[in-house]
Amino acid sequence: MNGIARGVAGVVTIAVGVGVAVFLHDLADAGEPWASWRDALRSSGYVIVPMTLTWLLLGAVLQTPVAIRRRAGLRAGWIVVGGLFAYHMVVGLFAVKLAAIAPLPSPGVSGSDPGYLYGVFLGCVLVGPALLSAFGGWFLEPLPPSRPGLLDNRPEDVDDRTDPVRLNLFIIMVASWAPGWCFLSYIFFHIADRYELPLLPSDGMPILAVGTAVAVPSLVIVVVIRLFLADMPVKRAFPRLLLLGAVVALLIAAALAQLTRFLPAGYVILVSILLPMAYVYVVHHLYRAAPGE
Image (tube, rainbow, N blue to C red; front, top):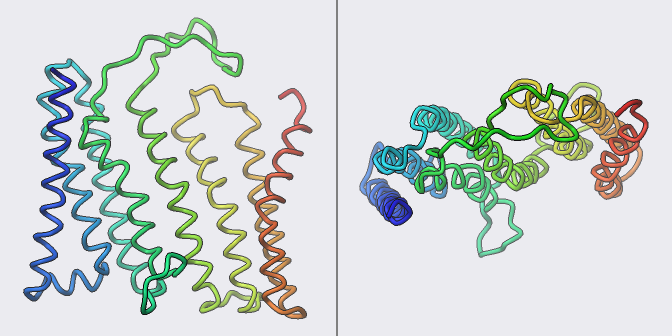
């Protein structure tokens, strides 16, 4: 019965979220201030942001009675929901800024048109956490104590209980931002030559965008491991290697960007496609060379 109740609450939440999006779309057609909001977020963002926010909040509300009946953890779940509400607000504000600079869709329909990537990016980073809330993914029962693994540096007598809510949050955010960052990086690649940095030619900015797309996820992973996952079984050398790999990727991208002073930008951009492979090689080489790991 609990499973059926969770499913029904999830379906109701999805339906209401879609209804909210349709209702707001009709309001925008009727006039201000809704039309201005739609212009600020574009049509895709104006639909995705309120729809996923409805899924997040309404889903948590409807799943709370089910969670009480299942004796699931409410406090941890609502803390995550509150954090994801703030996350949605931040992404929404970023979406307004991104809408102002991202490429606009060209006439006709083309799956490779970078103008359509704005909505795809928002869908990637918002839909997953909201759907999990709609179906009660943040209200879970605690798991039994986990046994120390081979890579675990903690003493065996530590009574560690695996936190399924934190694990769900980590998995869904990685799954959301892995494709989301790829689409966002593609947008940045297309607009990079509009901007300039000291000592870098404008033709080389897309190459620096490629290097940044490779390096930033590593830097984020290092911060996440240090702040939130320090008690998980992670090799001590892993964050350090990711940091070094990110720095090397940025240095290679900056060097390739300088080559656009002497070579056509298209040739150098083609070479910069090899940056991800160079990054993987550097991290793998450093990992093998790390003593005692």
